[in-house]
Image (cartoon, rainbow, N blue to C red; front, side, top):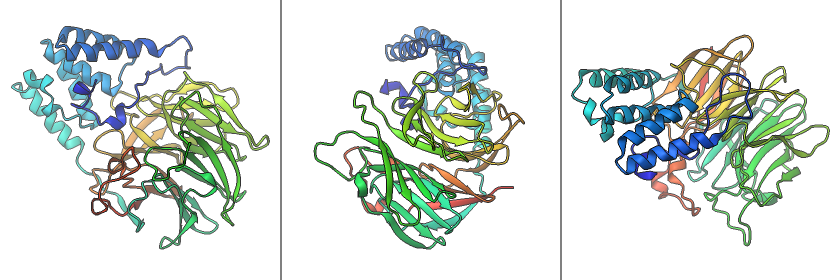
Length: 436
């Protein structure tokens, strides 16, 4: 697939292929098999220069997963390669309006369109749509360049921030935005790479997700996999309990987590597309939503009334789960809005604050919701095209200010636990945006 895939989206968005479900309640009879079958068949046809087959398979894929950004783009390419220019321009015009830079001017599939004035018009529309938007200011920087930062949390009692490190497998604590210390040391308590991180202020707990990721520099003998949740005492830094999955038959990977007001913890398992929960009364890790419902879950947040859990499926949008009955609905939005490529997700005053690192240019968005929290009414770009961005990841809301990691630097870290030369690395930067 690489021969076509590398022409467009970054691999960070294409690492998992997702089914776009209907806007109504999830139907169990919907299957990903058709989606994947058409997608893969289309890519294979392209690589064999069977452009009619390429187009036809992506027509079918689009019928199964309408408005999926990657499929839409490939479908436009299929139309262009088979002389259906009007159809191709229709799709490209919509995608340009969304402001997603696919690099279409460099994709040879669109060569037949380039002499048409509409192509230049679309490029200008895209150029306007991706003009930088700047509302952020510096909060603080971390001096250790090789952290590979991922998660960020805040404790209002001590006015401290907590930042997770994937490469160094530790948690950094920042007092008053300028005094740094290690909340836990590297690999302490048997912890692996640290990703999502949340504070339970009332109960004085710090919750983190941890996974044995290839980017960690820790190498433990005879340890090849592992994922779990670690609960720490916010005051002492001591470990209270860890909840580790012992299932070695599946590729579990706990990614992000969210807390309800009653102390329940919800965890996204990106590896198996499952959702787990730690009930505050039972204090045990349990499966909450099984595989086959939400594909590639990442960002996760709970509504302030503890009624809904919102989960981002990386290329498929945001889902709303009713916590009492587990009823799942996809958040609706019109064709001029994309909820794809979101990593960090927070709920704020009837809106989502979302960090898109799976589309280019990276951006921070605000999505305003209806009164039922089921539909996006309008969207607003809060930050886009910031030169400091190197895969922004997760953030947290403190009062009316959104703090977020601007430069995780994932592209600089390798799967063998090494990284680019230190002179190429940047000091991790936390930015902030005043929410109005």
